[in-house]
Image (tube, rainbow, N blue to C red):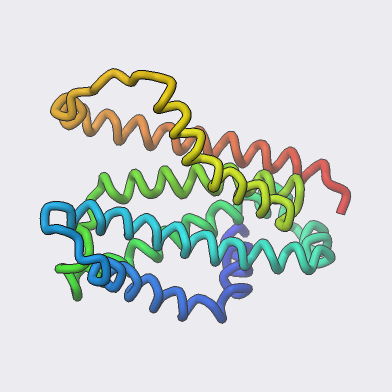
Amino acid sequence: MIYNLVRKDVLIVRKYIYFMIVFSFVAPPFLLWNMEPPKSMVNFYASMIFFLVLFVTVLFLSNSVSLVDEKYQKGCAYLCTTPYSRKQIVTSKYLFSYLVFIGYCLIYKLSNMVIPKYTADLSIELVAISFFGISLFRCILIPLEFKFGYEKAKYIITFLIIGTPFIVSMVSENFSFIKIDASYLMEIKNIIIVAGCVAVLLINILSILISCHIFESKDL
């Protein structure tokens, strides 16, 4: 049942998908080639570019779906009269974002095989950290979209994105952080990855429950 809802979102953005496939393949190596970082920093820059292009891809395609849903609210009201439950409609929004994430990783892996010099190795750590970041972002944005609508949620999340560097800067200036031994972190790498996976799962469950509560209380 949820498969059809995700497929519906894919069909909504089908005219953008081919462009985003090319963009996801070409943009990471092109950006790294254009930056010309020192050899010691190539992998770091490539990893940052991986996440940046991923963020743009997920945000663009997800926002395109949200924009259509906002424009044709009667379609959403009609969808609620079908056998699909509101919980399934909500869950499909999360699954669509993660489907885009998986698709991007596969395309990037292909790009890495063709142009290894200007791409990062797709390690488990890089995928896990990127998934955590994207998941956290979508788990904040989706409930806001259900609560305030796409247009208002867009401004709220833009404010959060712009304000985050300033908040981090203020915190770093007023608090002294204890230096952590990097070698110790490497020793407990597997524990950190497992803890991150559990955190992502809990964040998604909580976000879905909040979105379901908001959407079920709406009068369409």
